[in-house]
Image (cartoon, rainbow, N blue to C red; front, side, top):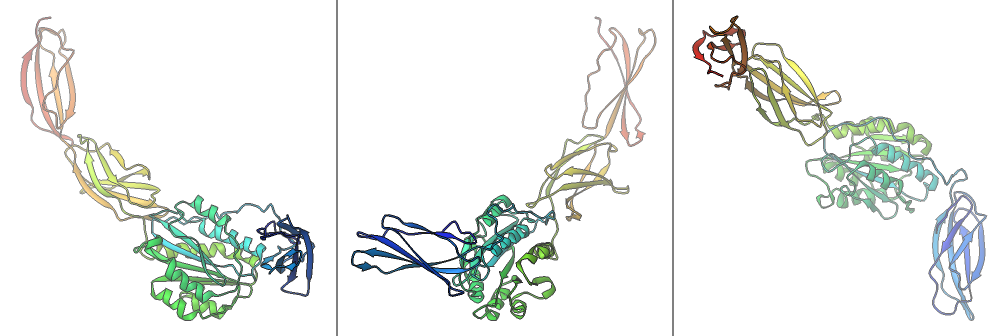
Length: 446
């Protein structure tokens, strides 16, 4: 079937073997006494069924007519859309909220796709899922999200490791098909335990494991023992019920406490009213009580002078908004600079010579800071060279030059020819200087 509206849909089939004179198409409502019938030519393999009742499940049978009678029918089912359905639906409106965390989490959504939901309401479920998953940073080292749809028999729509970006995941949500069938929640819960929470399809042993059930009715099989198996396997369960869902059943599935993990709304239109609160709780589950930005590693200092040095580090695996680099003397007050999260090096300037500095580097995400990466470095000595103009100068001149503590020779330029100079060399320690080393020299004739 295709091109489903509130009052019609198109059925198509593969041509029957032999010399078919006509096809007879018969349909009947599964909810009322409504029936219908039409015939098409034997060389046709499609038929438009029109004048149907909105939101109604129909059984359709196609018979091949030969000269001597009819063959066995080909039978299928389809449900018309709601009267208010619009083919050009608006795009998803994603939440302004984001869940900023470097924690790893594997989330499997288990979505009820039974006939009682209806196509229009399933579109609302798609919007609800898009708003829910759109708050997370998706990736192989961050949050992964898989989805299984169930009715009579569960089916994996995509595994945890199938979509490694948010954009790819949202595209899959937009294309999520409506399955149809009966509500067998217990079977579906066991299915995701056996098929989706597996390392072979992307589950990471060290990641937090979360299951989210969305259902609109009471299960037609046992759910208590199956949901306990999931929780015993370390999987945190959320249960979201709509319309005809059984609240006691939802409580038996969800992880405690119920006020965080269990939701029940009277109609599908109310799903978007609870999505922000749900995503906030989901975000806290992803983060866990011990969550925080990952700490940087491998602090290295270089380019050391008497007044500066460079600090370089390796960033953590997860996202970082910025780094805070704190530096101080052993007895002084801390100073700090901030570096963008994409940068892992900075030059610390305006330092005192021959002084040890303590350096702490923090990763920052939102209001949270990581544990510090610690290190030390000592600036070099500062050397001052003074040289005086000699006896051939009209007026003696005094010049000063500073060089880094690692320097032990310097070229003095722009001196007067055939002139005697006196040089004084001082070692500087903070604001103090050593006694000078004094030497004299004479420049050559020009």
